[in-house]
Amino acid sequence: MREKEIGAMRRWYLPLTVLGLAGLGALILTQRGRQALGWLAYNFHQADTLLQWNETTQHELERLHAAVNQLASSLGTAV
Image 1: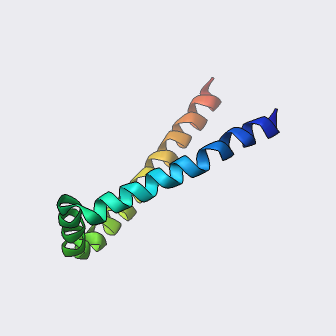
Image 2: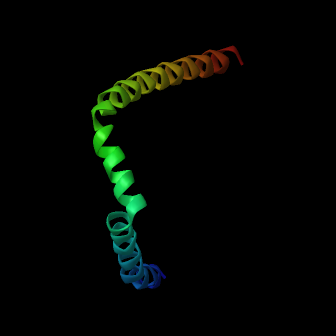
């Protein structure tokens, strides 16, 4: 059964590759795609702000995870 699933996935490699390359071609060759790439290049300097936000969000998720674990352990001992 596992070999059958692997064979089914291999059947999709070429169509997905062609679809991805076509999407990249459309991005590069169309006026709107070139505008989008220009916008990304122009606004690339804001990536540092997004990375800082990502670190802050990750810290907050870790804090929430610790609070949920503490709550679960206190409920487990109270029962």
